[in-house]
Amino acid sequence: MIREMHAAIFDLDGVIVDTAKYHYLAWKRLANEMGFDFTETDNERLKGVSRTRSLEILLEIGGSTIDDAAKAKLADQKNSWYVDYISHMDVSEPLPGAAEYLQCIRAKNVKIALGSASKNAPLILERIGISSLFDAIVDGNKVSKAKPDPEVFLRAAEELNIAPTECVVFEDAEAGIEAAHRAGMSAVGIGNANVLKDAEIIIPGLFAFPITLPSE
Ligand code: BG6
Ligand code: MG
Image 1 (spheres, rainbow, N blue to C red):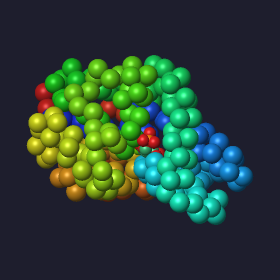
Image 2: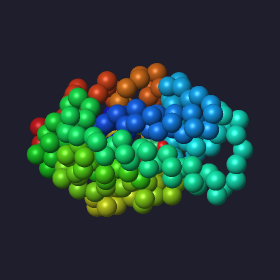
Image 3: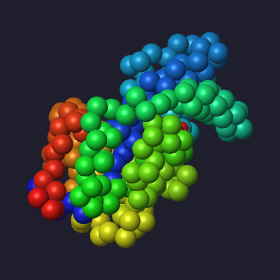
Image 4: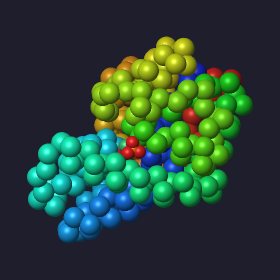
C-alpha cells in the first residue's frame, strides 16, 4: 500500500518524457557508421541502462571488441548526436498528463525531485519547460551506482530533506521499482503491469492521477 506522499521522486525517461526515441536514433547512427544495424528491439535493452553499459551492449550486438579509449570516444560521439536531437525538444514533449500532475501535487505542497541516470537530464527538463517544478534534481552527474542500487533515490530524499519512507517513486523500469524498495520507498509503476508487478500501484501514465494526496 502507498503510504502518505510528502515527496514524489520521478524517473525521467519513460515517465515524464520519451527520450528513448532520440537515444535510438543516436545509437543507430553509431552502429550504422560502424557497419552494422541496430533495431528498435535492440534499443529496448538500453532503457534505464547507463551510457557506458549501453555502448557495451551495442558493441556486443555488432560483435566489436575495442579498448577503453576507443569506447570513450564512441560514447562521446553518440552523446553529441543525442544532445543535438534533444536540443530541439520543446514544451510539446512531456508525456500526457506529466506536467499537469507535477503542477497538481506541487500546488498541494508535495516536494518534487528527479531521480534519473541521465547526465543530460537538466537540459531535457529545461527544453520541455518544467525545470521550475523540481525542488531537487539528482541525475547521472551526481550518482555513481545504477538502479537497482537505491543511491539515486536516497540522494533525492536527502536533497529534499524528507525521510525515505515518506517518498513515493514513479518509475517505468523494473530495476527502478527495485531501487525504490531498497531505498525504503513506495513505488508507482508506469507502464507494463507484467514487468512492474512489484510496484504498489501500476498505472498506464501520469494522466491517470493515481495518488490521494495528504491534504485530501
Ligand atoms: C537513462 C536512459 O535514463 O539514462 C538510458 O533510460 C540512458 O537509455 C541513460 O542510457 C543515460 O543517459 P545519458 O543522457 O546520460 O546518456
Ligand atoms: Mg525510465
